[in-house]
Length: 128
Image (cartoon, rainbow, N blue to C red; front, side, top):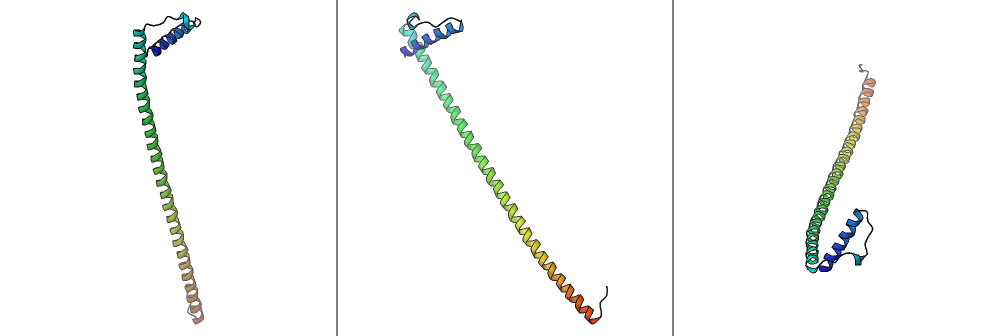
């Protein structure tokens, strides 16, 4: 942790110099932190990394779970729409079958009517 704390100090010095518009310093020109201060900074950094890593992991897991729920809901919706389309097509086919049967019955009734009219004409009792 001492090495991490010292590296953080070096990076902060360089960033502050860059923010002030000055050039970078060589490693030898940056003051070295004492062990206690370096250990404190390194420990704080590690603690913050643990907290942020756990938070990021939880957010990532939550995002993944919500994405899975959305995919499941979309799949269910697609299945419902597919079933509705299947039912609609089945109903339409049933209606066409009924329509064909009605046409056949109408043709049969027309044939019978024609036969009755022809018979009536032959007997001479046709009235209009």
